[in-house]
Length: 223
Image (cartoon, rainbow, N blue to C red; front, side, top):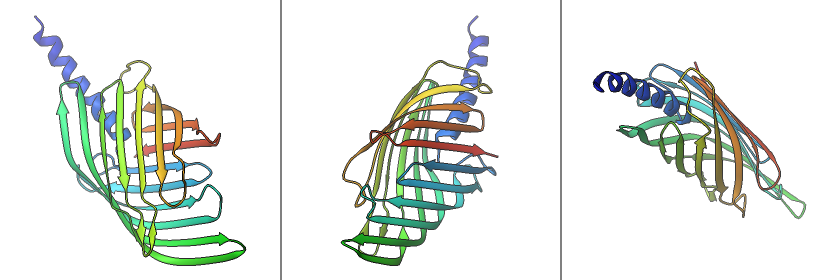
């Protein structure tokens, strides 16, 4: 007598997880286009990519980085590649391992004791992300190298969050997310940002205030 309910519940759960994984992932489903942005005072990033397969996406991105003391600024425009290396499908959860990388041109400016220096460098940005999620819990860890000649701005971030309640995949679901991140050479402290996230099918928005009392806003849209 339980076969029929399970045969209905499990496909619905799989659909819901696939939608949420798309929202949390650095690329969308096959032949989809993803646009994403992450903005605060010292870090502004926008990218768009196109998934040529369920596991591969190519795109472009633009990133602005600034040191906490405002003595260093960096802008980076790059071509990007994203690859789903491994996916683990579990009865009530999903986990993913991603490769993310790019190659582009870095423009930098350093201001020290009235001596302004500017430079242009080729930068490479390989990295990995691991995420785990259910319909109620989300965990992620990211490390990405930002390397040019004599420059190391490696980026690390961890995220954890939970949804306030379960919903159908076509309804808005609110989440509470906390992220801790740092970029080498630009900040000596760990930025911690609690955020509210709202997911609805093919988009999400996030907003919060970090431990330096600076606002942060993120968005993602798949079309």
